Amino acid sequence: GASNRPQAVTVLGATGSIGTSTLDVLARHPERYRVHALTAATRREALLDQCLRHRPRVAVLSHERDAVWLRGELRGAGLDTEVKSGETALVEVAEASDAEVVMAAIVGAAGLLPTLAAVRAGKRVLLANKEALVMSGALFMDAVDRHGAVLLPIDSEHNAIYQCLPPEHRGGLARVGVTQLLLTASGGPFLGWQAGDLAMVTPEQACAHPNWSMGRKISVDSATLMNKGLELIEACWLFDARPDQVKVVVHPQSVIHSMVAYSDGSVIAQLGNPDMRTPIAYGLAWPERIEAGVEVLDLFQVARLDFQAPDEEAFPCLRLAREAMDAGGAAPAVLNAANEVAVEAFLAGRLSFTGIAEVVEGVLDASPLQAATELEAILEEDRRARERAERYLERYR
Ligand code: NAD
Ligand code: MG
Image (cartoon, rainbow, N blue to C red; front, top):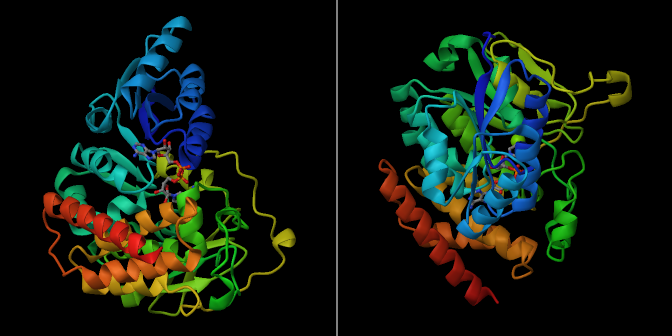
């Protein structure tokens, strides 16, 4: 609840799409929140601007040379922000006792260790970094329970499902009468395209999402439907659901963010404008509600809501993700690692759009099923899958 003292919030991945939206919401409520730490990989000018505006106690960049630069700029501006660099510093700020809330908004596997550190420190963790949970599902959820962390999903679909569930859902979906989670998908920029038309698609086309403005990696994932595949896995872990209890529904307007079906025939949905500040504000204030800067939904302007089944022929990544979740163990971590390498290669012009699914499938097929109970084993599988994906790319050219 709201106390007299503002809550300290750390934003991991502050310069990204989610990080920027988070700072927008925080700045609307200075009496409730103050920024403790901000982190970024390499965009030092953007982090400098954020430091000048939000005055964090700590800032972290990936490379020491950028940290030296930022330190100088901040001293010059009369700020005494402590500037650190490297992966260890990232883990340190994620678990530091100075912050009660951690927004996990780094993209990809790079976010796993700091996000897990925040969980193990028992924070309120706002989870945007879905890849971290996909990689380490069982271990991650076990750490949430063991360390009393409060895990709030920020991914809009999972945030919607969370809002449509009763508070007692942690005891299992069946006990609260839930029969199905209906995960909505926009379908991405290539909705309706046939497999044959997708081979020549460019990164610019793939990153032009019809409804959401997002980082480049998740934009490509949305275009291949791998994003929905990762979200299917994310939903299974967050809500203790079996893959067959999660149904993907293509809904091009992105107004219904997801739904929950109950045994009495009720379907409860969460609706809103496609703006990530809504789930971010929900996660920050839960169980209270705060203003997020998002306009109320104008249903007359929306006018209609459409639904259709996903085309898994043209977009095989959704099937690959479901198969990886069914296989269990480290398979989701392998899927994620191969996808990260393939997406990067696509963005660099080294791989075709349809090649992404081929690389992921090739790497999954070549990877013997491993257990994923220990963090070390997960990191090892992630590393091996990246090597396999690189080798696959060599052959592919
Ligand atoms: P983005 O690319 O815009 O931002 C990523 C942030 O992470 C940046 O601050 C970047 O500096 C930092 N970062 C990247 N690589 C790093 C590394 N190796 N070490 C340390 N920091 C690193 O991404 P985004 O769109 O904001 O997405 C962030 C996460 O949230 C992703 O996992 C994404 O799937 C998830 N998500 C995003 C949206 C959205 O609308 N953008 C919606 C749902 C979920
Ligand atoms: Mg989403």
